[in-house]
Structure formats: structure tokens, C-alpha cells
Amino acid sequence: MAIKKLLDIVLTSLNDSKAIDIDLFDVKKITNMSDYILIASGNSRRQVNALADKLIQTVKENKFETLGVEGKAEGEWVLVDLGDIIVHIMHPRSREYYQLEKLWGK
Image 1 (cartoon, rainbow, N blue to C red):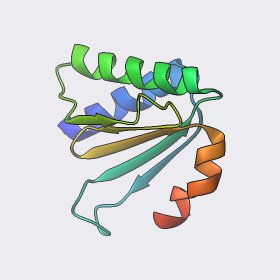
Image 2: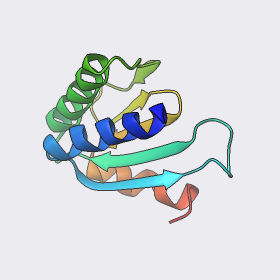
Image 3: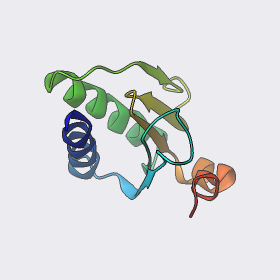
Image 4: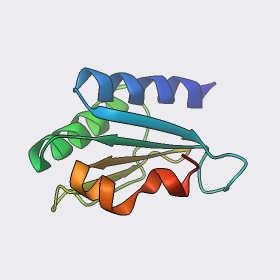
């Protein structure tokens, strides 16, 4: 049940921070890399970084661990690895270009 609680924490953090276009993919049957892939957007590089910072802080406050963070320097696409949940926070331009949703089934 820990993963369910973590998923709720992640979704609440992103919603409270005004992330846009949040998509959640259950990928347990597709890959053993993680159970869920979550993709969200921020309207600017600054918001992308702020969303990632708030998410990392909230996860820590709730006694969960962040395994890795990539892309904060650029602010176009920040990946937050929470183990069973991989969160991609992207600028809309990058999200449109890379189209990760197609990779995971949308």
C-alpha cells in the first residue's frame, strides 16, 4: 500500500502546484523499470523546476525517498525517480516534441 500512498502524494503535490496535463500510466505489465509513469507539464522552465522542487520536498516530508533527479539545470524536462513511480515534468514544447504518451500507450 506504500506505493498507493506515494502516488497520492505525487498527484496532490502536482495538482496543488498547478501542474497541467497530468497523465498517469500503469506500466507494470509493460516494463519492470517501474509500476507507474506520470507525465505533467509546467508553463515555463521556472514552473517546471518549481514543480519538481515542490514534489521532491513533499516526498521527503512524507518519509519517502527520491532516488534521482535529472534535467533541473535546463528546466525543459525534469525526471524525478521515485522507484516505483517515474515522474516526467516537462515544458509543453518538449512534451510535444518527445511525445512520451505514445511510448506508454496513449
